[in-house]
Length: 478
Length: 104
Image 1 (spheres, each protein chain N blue to C red):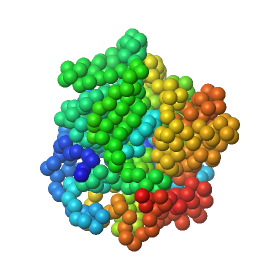
Image 2 (image 1 turned 135 degrees about the vertical axis):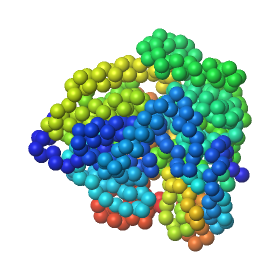
Image 3 (image 1 turned 45 degrees about the vertical axis):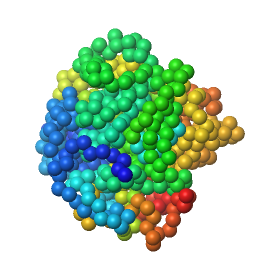
Image 4 (image 1 turned 180 degrees about the horizontal axis):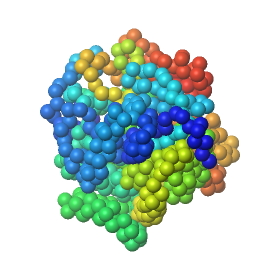
C-alpha cells in the first residue's frame, strides 16, 4: 500500500503540532527530510502541552504538574525543529481536493494550497459532550476549556467552580484549580465508585498513571473537597449567566451555587480530514465511535495517508508520541528508506500496552449510556442552531429516521458552525435509541468542507473553489 | 461584571483596546475571550435563541466565540490575541444589521 519510492518527491506533510505531529516531524528530520508541519496554534505542543503566550512567566511544573518533563521535552523538540521544517503555524487545513490541501492562514486571512504525496494526520481530540439543561449559559465550559483557561491564560472559569462528567481529566482539573487557589465546590463523577474499584486491578498494568490518578483523588479528599459518585447533571441554572448546578444521585436531587462549571465525558477524535480524504472508517467499541482505520504502523486505507495520535482513537499523549514516530517510520519505509526495525517493534509493543490500559480506564470512567434515555425534551442539543432533544426525538419517530446524515438533513443537527463536534455524538445516541439500532448502526456524520468556518470576508473566493452547501450557509450566518 | 477570574501572571503590561466603543484595559498575551470576559459576562448572542454565549471549548472547535471587529471582520475570540488599538463589538454595532432572532 505504498507509493513507489521513485515517485515520492514531495516532502511529507504533517497536520497538527501536538505530541504526535512533533515526534513525527522529528523522526523525518532525523532521516534527512524537511517535512511541512501545519498547525492551527501559534506554538507547538497541541492542547495537552499547550504553551502559554510570550510574556507569561509560570514555570512548566506549575502548568503541567507530573507531565512537566514530558511537556518540556516536546517543547524543546518543537523549538529545535523550527528551522528544520517548513513550519506553518496559525494555519487551518479546511479541505482536500485531489492531492492538494486547502489552507487558510488565519492571521492574515490568506489562502494557499499544499500539494502532498505523503500526509500524516495528527489532528487530536476535543471533549466528549453530552448536553443538559442550561449547558449554553455563560460560565459553563468543557473540562478541556477549563484547563486551557488556566494553563494558557492564567484565568479560572469562575471564583467558585464545580467539575462534572467523567474521565481522568475530571480529577486532574479539579486538582489544578484548587492548587491555583480557586474554590472547587464539588467534583461530580457520573461513574459509580464501584467502577473505580472494579477497574483498579487492570489499571495496575500502568502503575504510574494509576498512581497519579489516586494521588489527585487523595489530594482533593485531604483538602475536604466534595466528591460525589454516580452523580448526573440535571441543569445549570441562571438567567444571563451561570449561578448554580443541579444533579441527581440515587434518585435524589441536589443543588449547589457556583459561578463556573466544567464538564465532559472523556475525549472524542477529530476525524474530519480523514473523512474528506476518503479514508475507510470502522466502528470502534472502546471509543464508541466510527474511526479511521489504521494498521499497526499508522497507515490509513488510503495510499499516502497516515494517522497518529488521538485523532484516530483516544490513547493519550504518551501514546500519541509513539504513534507519531511510528507513522513517520512508515512514511520513510514507503519512500524506500531504511528504518530501525527494533525501534518499530518497541513502539508497537508500547502502544499495545497502552491500548490494554485504555480498556481498563474505560471501565473506571464508563460512558453514561443512560443519558439518551433520561435527557429531557427541552434540553438544547445543538448549541449552534438551538435544536432541542424533543425536536430530534420527534423527527426520528415521525420520519422513521435510521441514519445520522438523514437526521442532519431534517433537523439541522450537525449542520451548524461546529459541524457536529459538540452535538454529533449525543445526536447519535438519541438516534440509536429512537430507531432501535446500535450506536454503530446509527452511523456517523459525514465531514463537509470547510471543516471549520471560513471568515466571511473571503468567502466569495472560497465559493469558486468549493461550492459546497456549508460554505453558503456560513455566509448566511455571518 | 467579569465572568472569568485572573489567578496569576498579573505582571504583564497593560494593553488598551475598545469594547463596544468604550476603551478597556487588557494584559499583553490575553486572548480576546479573556480580555472581554474580564469586563463582561458574554461574548455574543446566539443567532437563533438570542441568548448570551461566552465560548465553550476554548480550543477552536465549538465556534461559539466569534465576534466582530470595527471593520466587520469575524474573529474567533478564543484563538485571537488582543492587540493595542483593537476595536471589537459583542453587541450589534449601530451601522450593522441585527442578526436573526437577536432582538430579544
